[in-house]
Length: 307
Image (cartoon, rainbow, N blue to C red; front, side, top):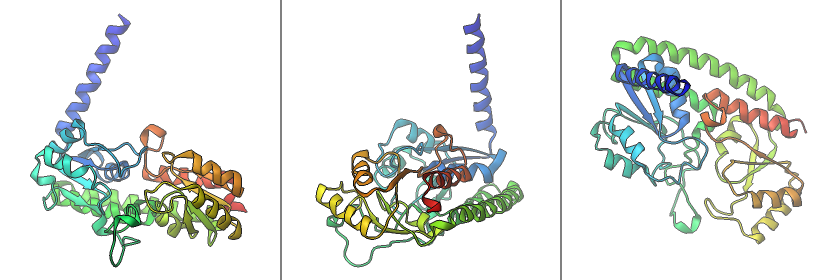
């Protein structure tokens, strides 16, 4: 009896979710949970939003899956990070999804990288000898919360274009999002004020926008080149540099290898802080502000912000 009751409730929940999706004016698919979280906030009850990635793994290196293709096929709007972040897997999804309106150039395609000022755009000749270099610039711009304001504005504008009947709602939700996020940014900067000007090492070139937002300096990375695993000789040189420049903090995403981080921590006497790189509902990071609250709290707990 209990099993039958649970199955009935499950069935009801499924059909309620299906009805909500059918009745929604705009079906949105995003390539990352960060864009999804912002889109949900701006779209409110007028949208159904799904992210193709979960925010707990490296978004550069994924495999196109049937579930991704199905989502793209049914979407009215596809929101991508761009700057080649998804270059290794999204083209295959778009090709198989056969939805012309969400392909580049389509009315339902939104590349958020077009609206932000990208950092670290390479100049001159670029080759594989330089590692995994992003030719269009650093795609991790969502880690500057000020860019969250830009992303939200772009999403609101596209939603108003696709669904003009609810444009006022999108504008109102955008205004509220901007007001909340600006207050949070002021609080986060206040809490990390002691980090301003401090030298920091990161595992990958992922946190340059974060550093710019909160005023610390990334002087080096655990990786000798982007996407290239560190050698023992590189780590030894890095430890010497950390000591000579009085670095107290190393930042890394959770999916990075732990051995190089542990080596640097033991030999350089630094705090290694694992911080989230993305909204990740499965990890309890459900909103864009949750992401930065978790980052700021992690740095605070390490004691680095108060040294």
